[in-house]
Amino acid sequence: MPPHKKIETLFRMCTDSFVECLVTSWMNPRIPRCTDHGTNLNRYLKEQLPFSIIDGIVLEIIKLYVKKYRIYFQEGYDKSMLPTVSHLLQVVIIPGLKSLNLGTIVYVDEVDDNDFDEFEVTFKSLLPVLSNIVEISLTTHGLNVTLPICSDSILKQMSENCPNLKCLNISFNSRVTDVGLHYLIPSQERVGCPSLEVLFLHECSVTPFGISDVLENLPNLRIVGYKKLGGVLFSLHDRYIKTNDSRLLEGFKLTHVNNLSCTFKKHEGVCKLIHAVGVLCPFVQNLKMRVLDSDVPHLDVFKCLKSLELIFNVYRPLSPSNGTYAYLRSCGHQLTSLTLICGPFQTAFLKLVGKYCFNVKQLWIRCNSLILDCELELDQPEECKFIYLESLYFRVGETEYDECVLPVSVFRYILRDSCLRELRLIGRNVLTTDLWLRELWQSFSVQSLERVLIALPRQNIVNASLNLSLSSVHMILEQCPNLITLENLLVWKVSQEQCDELRLMMKERNINLKLTYRIMNIT
Image (cartoon, rainbow, N blue to C red; front, side, top):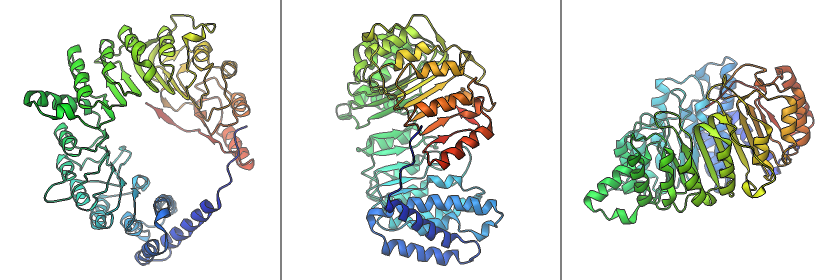
């Protein structure tokens, strides 16, 4: 059986009760003095709590605020009776904060233009308090327009008051433009954020020019979350070559480069990009690229590379072949994480991955079809050495309707010597039955498994799409003593009532296991 829930520490229990008491008394919709209560709570946080625990307390207050707001709103209380997000900011933003994560606020429903304006005005007015802040997150989920928000004017205020900021996540904020990014750069007018090391900008209204600006003027940047970063580096390298710029020798400190959204029609373009990134970012450890197979051998310029994601799709799905084989043969030993996203994938290539990438801890294979073109022999252990593998993601098929054949022998070959902690099998496998799963479970050590996902690509909405019954659930629970998560039972031959009964049993026995039974979109 999965493990029992650990007994909470006395400190954790006291913290939870303390936060619950504070937030409940403040948010009580029957007491129309939210502002007064919020002021008192803010004063208490500033004057009575030690700085060593204040970041954790603030984070728990934000989470509990969102939870109770949703509950009160669903119970029919008028929005005007509840403290707004701006009230929340006035409570939790205090001197001494090192970390402020407002991402949870995305789950506050029913926001309008007035809420956005009020949030921006309030947050800007409170930023002068955060002179010691190191990490700020204002990201949203990007699904719809919601709080929190970030804008150019917020970044301007941030640059004038947060000189110690090292990590900033403002993804999915369309109000952020190149103008806002420029404010982060130190100048005579403002102190800026010279210590910034991590900057996430996914789906903002910034351009490659704005990214170039921060790269050239914030020398401590290690990670820039921007899907066209490779193209930016390519343009910078081209400009430095023409002007004989000294930065060709100095380079940047970037350790992560994402080039998944930048494509070239010709092989020479990708080779030049790889060369440019190699020259400007010699310390890259994490690389994501969209490539042709012939491009891959040129990746050997990255001597510090640990994590590699390759998408073989340049205007059409492609497959790894001789070029990828050549690279893995020479450099595969240095990888600890490998992701291959392609059209058809051959089991023969799986043997090459196992032979040369023997230090891999995380292996992701996502293909449109699996070609069983060779026997995966078990009597040649030197051919497969996934002994350090901890996480396997294996997906076949583009949509939930694409059938595939996934014999147990494929996974036995990969997993036989591993101590796997996470297993994700995604595909409409025509062989999937309770007997198939039992045979799979007997083919490797499942004692260390913590997370298991067996589901369909794309939409998981139809019950009994996979021929796995409740007996498979019990088999997994009996044989996996460290299991924490099992999903997605919605597409198994398991009813909602059966899942609820299992959850009740887990609760009565104090078992620490999350059973997922819900509509899911696996992209």
